[in-house]
Image 1 (cartoon, one colour):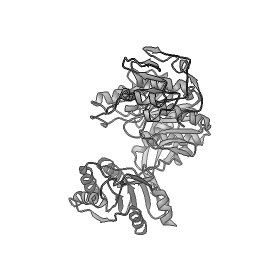
Image 2 (tube, rainbow, N blue to C red):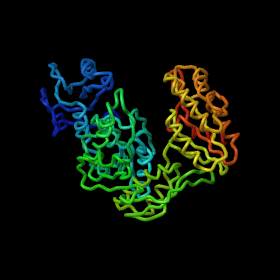
Image 3 (cartoon, rainbow, N blue to C red):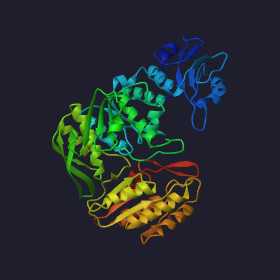
Length: 490
């Protein structure tokens, strides 16, 4: 769906958009908008974006050859035979023009934005689950892709480019969605991907060091400032009041109202008595909710830190007036694909799929699981090819330290030999006293874990998470661990 089959007049696309100058015929019809010259078709507008590696202005000639009759630039230049729009910031201009082009789909949806260092994906899935339980068909845009109904479209970024967001919001409306939950990354906010519309609700989960250096943020202050932008784009804000940066996040906010959640007495929605629950092959948490609403809640997701994500969802949905029973059921039915995702295969042991693919995420995962009653923690993992070797050493060392048994296998070996990658992982494992075995074929490694499971085990399939492919020698082969598990169980 490059466009939506509707011709929109150029003057309507640039209406109420901040631009420096225009030249050409504003009555021309636009069939679609592209910011990648390879996607230009006859009748398209081409928007030149400046990135860290490439500058769209260098591809104007190619875009015109492909049929673009309108070019949007932020450098003064003379181009003959095409309409030229000059903007101070083409990224911002793209966002507002895309909203005009798709006729402002966000105005037809209940829009929720979620920002924070951790918990965006889990919180978005919880909110979506509750909204759907209450009868509000809800789309999702984030790490798991773009979800509308039963369809999932892959996305390269947590927060896609503004044109993709507007295009998919329109698609969701056409599919009958009444709501959408969007993960608002700091980069997405900084680069104007979420401009052009206002969120009904904005949520802040937490803040810690991440995304500093390189093409991301120059320091923690900029990182925090970018996250705070969501609360200048939201009508109502929901904030984790226990986070020491909550005040800074709300600085200069323009919300009509702010609601708080957390475990402290300051929170309007409070969590109490959180405890880990295991049994019947499942791991989760139960806790009491008090304050603006009171009930006992359960989430089928391990780790007490996930109670904060649940409190965020409860605070928002309670404010919306959603029935307490729908909130409870929505939480209980939440599935976060590839994030400590339980797969129900046995009453005797727990089987979990998780995206952990570096030392930090692996340590966080395994230390969380070790808090549950267990016999052994068996961790199946590999490491990606064409990536720094130090990651492999570190992952091997962490798994050797925290897992009772490591099953070392393949995981997107890309252009490298899987045995070379495994040799690097073993360097880290051999620094510890941890037991491990090597089974290079991932499907056979999963089979081994299931066939050799013991009562009370927690088996973790780490690294793939929500991915549904295995990448080898430049080819992505279908590989969904849920399907592999079903096949093995049959």
